[in-house]
Length: 155
Image 1 (cartoon, helix red, strand yellow):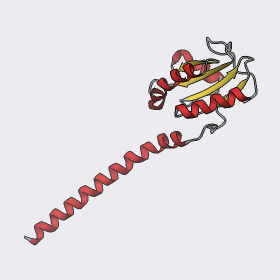
Image 2 (image 1 turned 90 degrees about the horizontal axis):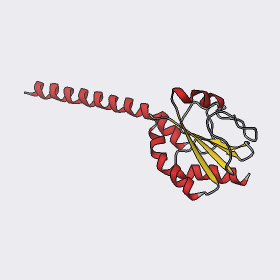
Image 3 (image 1 turned 90 degrees about the vertical axis):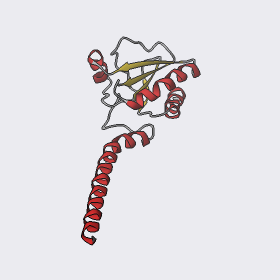
Image 4 (image 1 turned 120 degrees about the vertical axis):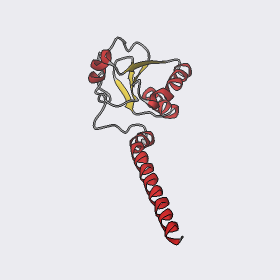
Protein backbone atom coordinates (compact mmCIF):
# COMPACT_ATOMS: atom_id res chain seq x y z
CA UNK A 1 0.00 0.00 0.00
CA UNK A 2 2.74 2.45 0.90
CA UNK A 3 4.52 1.78 -2.41
CA UNK A 4 1.40 2.88 -4.35
CA UNK A 5 1.25 6.16 -2.44
CA UNK A 6 4.86 6.93 -3.29
CA UNK A 7 4.29 6.21 -6.98
CA UNK A 8 1.17 8.39 -7.02
CA UNK A 9 3.01 11.24 -5.30
CA UNK A 10 5.86 11.00 -7.86
CA UNK A 11 3.36 11.09 -10.73
CA UNK A 12 1.62 14.12 -9.24
CA UNK A 13 4.95 15.90 -8.71
CA UNK A 14 6.08 15.20 -12.29
CA UNK A 15 2.77 16.45 -13.67
CA UNK A 16 3.21 19.62 -11.59
CA UNK A 17 6.76 20.08 -12.92
CA UNK A 18 5.60 19.68 -16.54
CA UNK A 19 2.70 22.13 -16.05
CA UNK A 20 5.00 24.68 -14.40
CA UNK A 21 7.53 24.27 -17.22
CA UNK A 22 4.83 24.96 -19.82
CA UNK A 23 3.68 28.01 -17.87
CA UNK A 24 7.24 29.36 -17.82
CA UNK A 25 7.53 28.89 -21.60
CA UNK A 26 4.21 30.68 -22.13
CA UNK A 27 5.39 33.58 -19.97
CA UNK A 28 8.71 33.80 -21.82
CA UNK A 29 6.81 34.26 -25.09
CA UNK A 30 5.09 37.30 -23.61
CA UNK A 31 8.25 39.03 -22.38
CA UNK A 32 8.70 40.90 -25.68
CA UNK A 33 5.11 42.10 -25.69
CA UNK A 34 5.31 43.24 -22.08
CA UNK A 35 8.64 44.97 -22.71
CA UNK A 36 7.21 46.86 -25.69
CA UNK A 37 4.11 47.90 -23.75
CA UNK A 38 6.13 49.25 -20.84
CA UNK A 39 8.47 51.36 -22.96
CA UNK A 40 8.01 55.07 -22.47
CA UNK A 41 7.41 57.34 -25.44
CA UNK A 42 10.59 58.29 -27.25
CA UNK A 43 12.31 54.93 -26.90
CA UNK A 44 13.18 53.64 -30.33
CA UNK A 45 14.28 50.33 -31.71
CA UNK A 46 17.86 50.58 -33.02
CA UNK A 47 17.56 54.05 -34.55
CA UNK A 48 14.13 53.37 -35.97
CA UNK A 49 12.14 56.17 -37.55
CA UNK A 50 13.15 59.26 -39.48
CA UNK A 51 15.50 61.78 -37.78
CA UNK A 52 13.86 64.49 -35.68
CA UNK A 53 13.80 68.06 -37.05
CA UNK A 54 14.65 66.76 -40.53
CA UNK A 55 12.38 66.66 -43.58
CA UNK A 56 9.99 63.72 -43.55
CA UNK A 57 10.06 61.26 -46.44
CA UNK A 58 7.75 62.10 -49.32
CA UNK A 59 6.63 58.47 -49.47
CA UNK A 60 3.04 57.37 -49.43
CA UNK A 61 -0.17 58.68 -50.92
CA UNK A 62 -0.54 61.38 -48.28
CA UNK A 63 0.75 64.91 -47.84
CA UNK A 64 1.55 67.03 -44.84
CA UNK A 65 -1.15 69.63 -45.43
CA UNK A 66 -2.48 69.76 -41.84
CA UNK A 67 -0.76 71.71 -39.03
CA UNK A 68 0.32 68.28 -37.73
CA UNK A 69 0.10 64.96 -39.55
CA UNK A 70 0.55 61.85 -37.42
CA UNK A 71 1.52 58.83 -39.50
CA UNK A 72 0.53 55.64 -37.64
CA UNK A 73 2.38 52.51 -38.73
CA UNK A 74 0.31 49.45 -37.84
CA UNK A 75 0.06 45.79 -38.70
CA UNK A 76 -3.00 43.57 -39.12
CA UNK A 77 -1.49 40.99 -36.73
CA UNK A 78 -0.53 43.53 -34.03
CA UNK A 79 -2.78 43.18 -30.97
CA UNK A 80 -1.66 46.53 -29.55
CA UNK A 81 -2.50 48.21 -32.88
CA UNK A 82 -6.01 46.76 -32.74
CA UNK A 83 -6.45 48.13 -29.23
CA UNK A 84 -5.16 51.56 -30.32
CA UNK A 85 -7.44 52.05 -33.34
CA UNK A 86 -10.35 53.49 -31.33
CA UNK A 87 -7.88 55.76 -29.51
CA UNK A 88 -6.53 57.03 -32.82
CA UNK A 89 -10.05 58.02 -33.88
CA UNK A 90 -10.52 59.78 -30.53
CA UNK A 91 -7.24 61.64 -31.03
CA UNK A 92 -8.39 63.06 -34.36
CA UNK A 93 -11.64 64.29 -32.81
CA UNK A 94 -9.79 65.72 -29.80
CA UNK A 95 -7.22 67.74 -31.79
CA UNK A 96 -8.74 69.65 -34.71
CA UNK A 97 -5.27 70.58 -36.04
CA UNK A 98 -4.15 66.96 -36.24
CA UNK A 99 -4.63 64.68 -39.22
CA UNK A 100 -4.03 60.97 -38.59
CA UNK A 101 -2.90 58.72 -41.43
CA UNK A 102 -2.73 54.97 -40.81
CA UNK A 103 -0.27 52.94 -42.86
CA UNK A 104 -0.99 49.25 -42.38
CA UNK A 105 1.89 46.87 -43.08
CA UNK A 106 1.33 44.94 -46.28
CA UNK A 107 2.77 44.37 -49.75
CA UNK A 108 1.64 47.78 -51.01
CA UNK A 109 3.06 49.74 -48.06
CA UNK A 110 6.54 48.25 -47.74
CA UNK A 111 8.11 51.20 -49.54
CA UNK A 112 6.52 53.62 -47.04
CA UNK A 113 7.74 51.55 -44.09
CA UNK A 114 11.26 51.54 -45.58
CA UNK A 115 11.22 55.28 -46.38
CA UNK A 116 10.30 56.07 -42.76
CA UNK A 117 12.76 53.42 -41.46
CA UNK A 118 10.01 51.64 -39.49
CA UNK A 119 10.03 47.91 -38.81
CA UNK A 120 8.02 47.58 -35.58
CA UNK A 121 4.39 48.41 -34.95
CA UNK A 122 2.71 50.39 -33.56
CA UNK A 123 5.02 53.28 -34.44
CA UNK A 124 4.03 56.93 -34.86
CA UNK A 125 5.69 59.82 -36.68
CA UNK A 126 4.44 63.41 -36.23
CA UNK A 127 5.16 65.77 -39.14
CA UNK A 128 4.31 69.49 -39.22
CA UNK A 129 2.86 71.38 -42.21
CA UNK A 130 6.38 72.21 -43.43
CA UNK A 131 7.16 68.49 -43.73
CA UNK A 132 9.54 68.42 -40.74
CA UNK A 133 9.52 65.46 -38.33
CA UNK A 134 8.56 66.81 -34.89
CA UNK A 135 8.00 63.55 -33.01
CA UNK A 136 8.30 59.80 -33.34
CA UNK A 137 8.14 56.69 -31.27
CA UNK A 138 6.21 53.75 -29.93
CA UNK A 139 2.85 54.45 -28.31
CA UNK A 140 0.92 51.72 -26.57
CA UNK A 141 -1.90 53.84 -25.15
CA UNK A 142 -3.93 56.96 -25.88
CA UNK A 143 -1.97 58.81 -23.18
CA UNK A 144 1.36 58.08 -24.88
CA UNK A 145 -0.07 59.11 -28.24
CA UNK A 146 -1.40 62.37 -26.74
CA UNK A 147 2.06 63.02 -25.24
CA UNK A 148 3.64 62.63 -28.68
CA UNK A 149 1.10 65.03 -30.23
CA UNK A 150 1.49 67.62 -27.44
CA UNK A 151 5.30 67.57 -27.74
CA UNK A 152 5.11 67.83 -31.54
CA UNK A 153 2.64 70.73 -31.41
CA UNK A 154 4.80 72.55 -28.86
CA UNK A 155 7.99 72.31 -30.91
